Image (tube, rainbow, N blue to C red):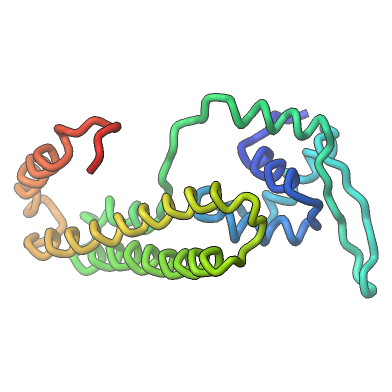
Length: 212
């Protein structure tokens, strides 16, 4: 029997709120957790089967309007597993982005490609900020799902928005920096030390607990 993953616990967290169909879980994962834990639909379905096998959830099949769907519900064992995970030390955070990866290797292309990667990061960040502003408005007007958890959701949503706002600020800086490069190859390497000194001056004196 395979080991539980972080996605397993994310699903248990959602199932602790209510019963869901498989499709509803996929959508709720995308809507509420996609900012920090995006997962493919196929992966969610595989995790659901694993949770049933471990008796952390139960499943039942029902027919609604001629359609067959599977509903999932957390078990007491599943709640206990979730409670244990919530208080366990988390793994280190990580940031994944194909556009950022393309930027890192833009010395194999050119400044236009480097700028395109920056623009892609910026567009995505702005789009996510717009989505979050809609969420803020929904909860501020008394709407939103699971109102009894609004305080926790608001904290997380603020984190997401701050992250994407930081990406936007970085994108403005990155465009100006790339504009000073003669190319993305070694001809721009002399800029590296200067930027590193600037980074050290701006951020090197701060501890992780000091306000910005």
